[in-house]
Length: 136
Image 1: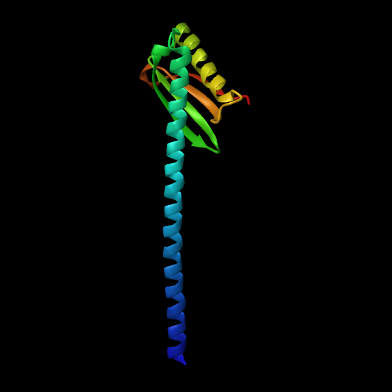
Image 2 (image 1 turned 90 degrees about the vertical axis):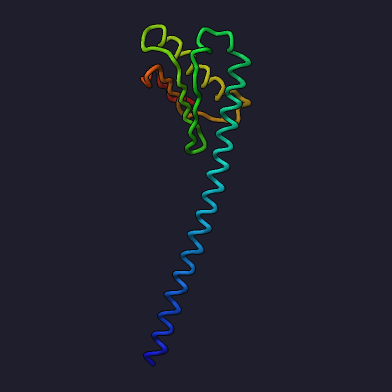
């Protein structure tokens, strides 16, 4: 009787261990696929925004100040961080306002497939010059 119980307990423990490993492996695989898809969507959003910028705003006084555009996705919306060489003075603040307006205009356009929750414009030295939540 003791051998029977020992075999049953061992069998149950092995089942839990095997099931747990299988479930974790599947979860990791699914998370990897989601992460890769999200990364591809983010790259597409950044590329579409850069194309929009270049096509419509290349001749503006602030376009050349943009150095890097980054997007991070959370809850189906992007947080956009634009790194510039602007300084935290009247001119930098004015130009950063135009940049945030441009990002929100792109995101809130009726045909946009990418939604934005927030825009941050960083200036030289990583100083935040402007930050705006999307009102929509």
